[in-house]
Length: 459
Image 1 (cartoon, rainbow, N blue to C red):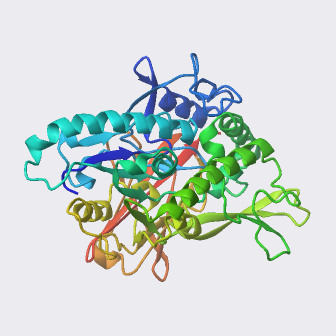
Image 2 (image 1 turned 90 degrees about the vertical axis):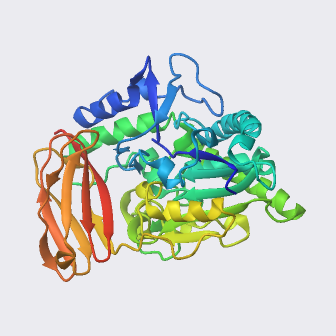
Image 3 (image 1 turned 45 degrees about the vertical axis):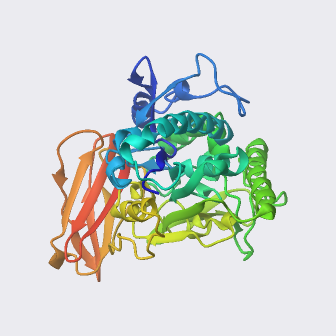
């Protein structure tokens, strides 16, 4: 309700990781784009860390929330959270807790850290709440708002670490409830596919660096898909990554076992609580089915190679089947028109939070029916070579279409010209220097908006 403590948990990449006050991840990410070999060594973790916190020299400081777009090629993107307070319906400073954390670490460990932080902050807020809400009807509890993989942390805290005793509501934004197939590609050494247009040796070096780094990160293993996410050429049945008859080539068995144990632990906690009665807090899950999203790996007929990634409707990152929070025993889904990376900044979240903080159920008709989609057939792309980005939407030229390109974290937007390529389809051919770039499209009547990040790597 209005007087509850609002705690925001960002997703993977959503917190700056620093050493000595300098953003170490940003520096390593730039190295990865320029020259992959050894670029991520400083942000790796020791092998076999499990659920333990890292010691020096592997420990990094979780600084502030990310404010500019960032991404791990082939895995996940985050557009940053510069306007998160406004999106959460503007709670006062004392009532808002942004929970920054080291997103490399096990979600189990971070859930315990979240538990300790919430206990401290809620005790503090109990002492201050009367100055803000003297007419409140009960003691404050917690509204936990979690973006992307932050939802895996939030739900583990609630169901496995007794957070349900303090919670009024859980709000997830594009959370991969059953994981993402991109994690399997990354850990198998295929994060960057052969259809990106990169030189084969550049793609191979990039994949090797990303895989070696990701194998040290417990968080990535815990993102592996728990739904049937493997197809074999010539066969119709979908299989799980645990199918020993058709293992995903290159995917380490230890990582698969970590994922199974993490998700099974959560399921067992949910089952135990469900026998005792319904959830003591409400759950609201914002998702989208407006964008092509990786859904399954395609293996060669003999199972020896990853040949393709199959797409289905989703939020551009999480397919619909993984977005649905079936563990609640209810239907908590609220569908919007926003990408995963933008769910924490769009008006859909503000609409939902205004209702939740007023003690009402959010409407099914949230803001965000935009009807405009940017699609990048290849990502990452090579610096100095033209690449194509597509724009889909009805009657866009009559709706005052504006399109821009800019380097992430730097000022100055460049206009982009899209030309009609077919009914409700437009294309632009772009070229950029190495770095992370953002393409944005806006229209009016009705208003529409979409953003897509692009990673440009050096040859």
